[in-house]
Image 1 (cartoon, rainbow, N blue to C red):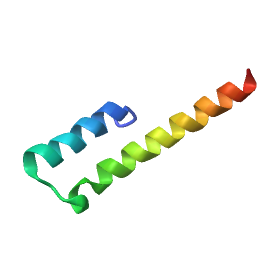
Image 2 (cartoon, one colour; image 1 turned 180 degrees about the horizontal axis):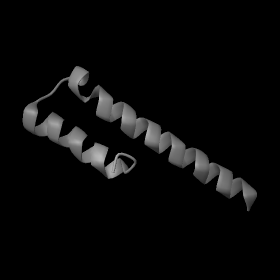
Image 3 (cartoon, rainbow, N blue to C red; image 1 turned 90 degrees about the horizontal axis):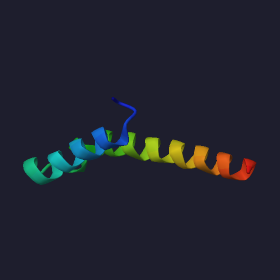
Length: 51
């Protein structure tokens, strides 16, 4: 479940909207989401270049 971007997106949204969390609290979820998106984009570019 930690590799699914929706898990981190929902956690990030809940912390910001319901708890009023600052950047120090949400930084781990934001970083995880950023890394997952970068990996997905990298693999998408690699697959597209092969075609």
